[in-house]
Amino acid sequence: MPIRKILVVDDSKTELMFLSDLLQKNGFAVKTAENAEDAMRRLEEDQPDLILMDVVMPGQNGFQLTRAIARDPQYAAIPIILCTSKNQETDRVWGMRQGARDYIVKPVNVAELMSKISALA
Image (tube, rainbow, N blue to C red; front, side, top):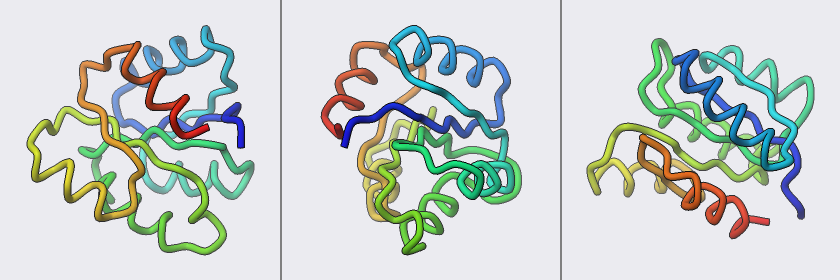
């Protein structure tokens, strides 16, 4: 399934702008959410082909939200790439166990992100 629509979930407006701009320049349609509640609303409105998920957010964190989405039959098929400043191997392993398909550490390397997105298509 080709990836065209991406939902970016991050509580940092700077990060949202950076990732949105980057993805749009690469031909993707982008929606953003600043927290878990926002993300679930966006999912209900229009299912994306991919979710880029921050981990450290107020309220429900990215690990919890990834687990909730991955376990919901309605959304389980949507791949999630965790995109976080948490760079420990234990964080990566935990994220993958929650249902993420991939993991990328901030600051985002553009080539690495694009190759991870292509690998999911």
